[in-house]
Amino acid sequence: MQHITVIGAGTMGNGIAQVFATHHYQVTLCDVSAPALEKALKTISGSLDRLIKKESITENEKSVILSHISTNTELKVAVANADLIVEAATENEELKLRIFKDMDQYAPENCILATNTSSISITKIAGATSRPDKVIGMHFMNPVPVMALIEIIRGYNTSDEVCTTITELSKKIQKIPLEVNDYPGFVANRILMPMINEAIHTLHEGVAGVAEIDGIMKLGMAHPMGPLALADFIGLDVCLSILRVMFQGFGNPKYAPSPLLVNMVTAGKLGRKSGEGFYVYVEGSKDMIVSSNFTKS
View 1: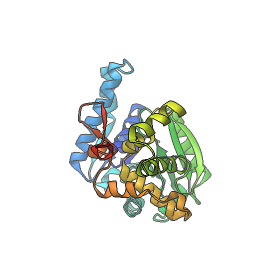
View 2 (view 1 turned 180 degrees about the vertical axis):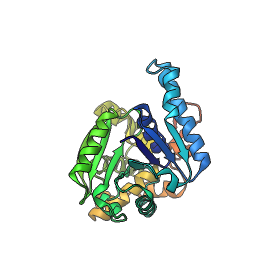
View 3 (view 1 turned 120 degrees about the horizontal axis):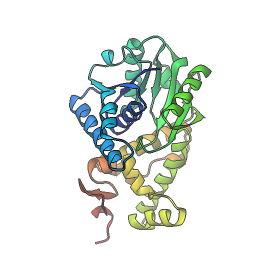
């Protein structure tokens, strides 16, 4: 396996591209937006600069890593020589099904098709292709260059050979692969999202404020980040999408999204990506300020 194509140049896509390039794979980063690709390369460069400051890599190593990454806005061209494609587009089922149908049409016959979906059925995604045995979930964690886990999700028809190949590949890029089966939310989000949703319910019901809820979970449960700050980091729209997939998949009201979460996403308050969620984020600053929507007058 030499050539990896990553579909989607957002936060997850550029992180995945960086990790593969760091481990000497030739990477094509594909996105329909040329400005998104330019931004992704700047993000990767900035990430590598931080590693240089920590003396984890050298300037020369940065140049080599960047030389392993090319970009393309044409899916047909980007996947033509791929051994593995990792789809990291927006968490939207209709979009992913369309992308997989196109990837299947243009990718080489033996190419493995992976998705970074955090909740959507691998089996359903595989059904959009003529090679369901070669479709698998590779759920990377954010930030990708830092987080060790890859949640490997086996679809109903995913072959043992493909599972073994992706597991071994994950180890080669110094990640820890843990295999799970294909159920809504898999393991990571099936456990995480109800906790985040309950934190939002707790805020909505006036039990405590943003700082108090996050502080209690950090100080009392040794979580590195409070659930509301984590929701902002993930993206409130992504949290809502995952909860809806789980609610639809299980039919259990415990997965029903908080009305506050629904309203915030509708209002465009998506967390870090929009500059405001439960906290307000100022560009260039690491400080977080509790949003005025959640402070007492």
